Length: 299
Ligand code: HEM
Image (cartoon, rainbow, N blue to C red):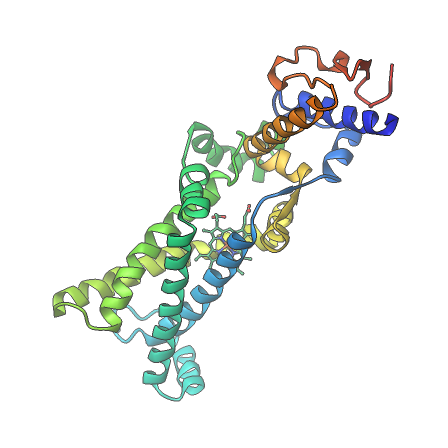
């Protein structure tokens, strides 16, 4: 019982204090947050991301070699020859490209239809909406990368930062364009004009995603600061220290949810948890009739 109180207090006192706003953390506070984890992505989201990424790479590798119009060709001749060698004929390569495209569109449609409420709507409404902190994020990130701004001085971010949101919006719009133009081209739907316009739009949409994918992969997989985000796309989880510094608004949302659930459970044991935003002087707050200081020791 004693241990439960001490742990309860250490966690709660720290959370309450950090919910007042992002700030510099002491060594002990960092240690506490680094040892906690938060769920960021569900199995559905992780699976969709990697199926989408794999499909994109296969489609871009084959699509680049399939571009026959000289004014659109951007892949070097040696690459096109290599791909011709792998597939034997252009026809086989085109069939492979279309098969992957059909698989990709089907996966996205299944996700959109069956995951509309739980995944898609939440992603669009909650994760992609832009606010003024997102607009302030771009110049702040430039200063941060130049070493002139600390983590805790950055505009607080939600589940995704403004850069990630911008890329996700480009990917979402391009995906819609590709899902329409792909079948038109593959199955010759409509007039020659419609097919020609589709080819142009297909190219522009692909290029906008392709241009950003290098930054996305660098920021997601290679940039040391974002390493926890990369592993979150495998395990689904991030440590709280990363969440606190990089996605403060999302961190506060999860904390509020945790707090509400915890308060409800403790009520059954007759313990009243102080409401999060009512805490004026949290260091002296009473938990379970005992007073603790910030280190979690009973005073
Ligand atoms: C090796 C390739 C890739 C890696 C390592 C990678 C990694 C990641 C990671 C770690 C996240 C989660 C970020 C976070 O939770 O903070 C993410 C999100 C996302 N990825 Fe990827 N990704 C790759 C390829 C792609 C491709 C090809 C696309 C689209 C064409 C894509 C689209 C997205 C989108 C839309 C999100 C959600 C929001 C965002 O971060 O923009 N990813 N990716």
